Length: 262
Ligand code: NDP
Image (cartoon, rainbow, N blue to C red; front, side, top):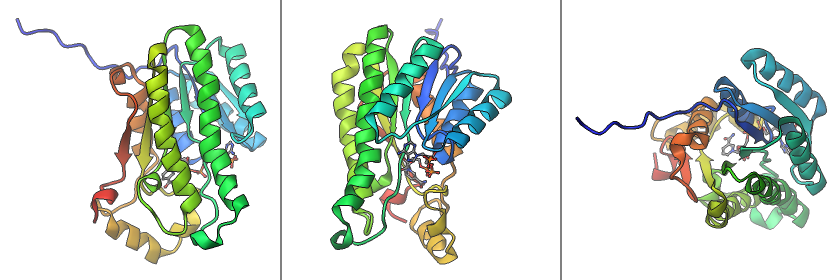
């Protein structure tokens, strides 16, 4: 008889995840996908009405429990409040998706001010560091391991023009991902990242409203189209599942081949 092989499982029933920036775009798609697979959730954003509305919608659509917590990822007190409220409600945290992010000012490096730079770094990099730190401490205390996925970007791998703070923040996230994975393996926490290419969301919809720019980006991408939020959420679901237990400290490129050239 050939050896029986374990069946992959993507079921998240009984798990609890925090998805930052879970009210829109990629974060919402990730939260909704987790909910489809039975995961209870806390979603955050800076807009209280969105948090309340989207959390209620997720509960109605997918029958899981979803907390909507208004919190700014660049603020440490807000982060601690999200972690405390999630633990108070669910008794634990298994998964963190560090997704909240902003694109910042589009301008040449010589025209980026210190404020422009720090504004992006505070949410995209410091927020990822502080959220992961707070959640990892909680998961370590629980003693049963967990998963962290950081939403980085192709922008962190290439030196794109006019988006220096964004690129630097995402390159920083990729570096943090490796150190977190290295240091937190002892707690059973895997830490990985995804690097999406272009996915049309509120973050970039103004740029892609110009059909010429959209066509140019599509031409640069071997699959000749931009990505969808589902094409990020599906891989993230796999990465937090039991089936991805041996992957840590690395990233998955979700860019239609953009970085290998069109
Ligand atoms: P959206 O602008 O559609 O959504 C961003 C979400 O994050 C919203 O819920 C927003 O809510 C929230 N958010 C923004 N800043 C903060 C903050 N300081 N604190 C808490 N919540 C915040 O963006 P996307 O879905 O496109 O982007 C999600 C992630 O994916 C980002 O990290 C982005 O860099 C990354 N990414 C996106 C790509 C794309 O092409 N779209 C490509 C590669 C990476 P609110 O404004 O109400 O706070």
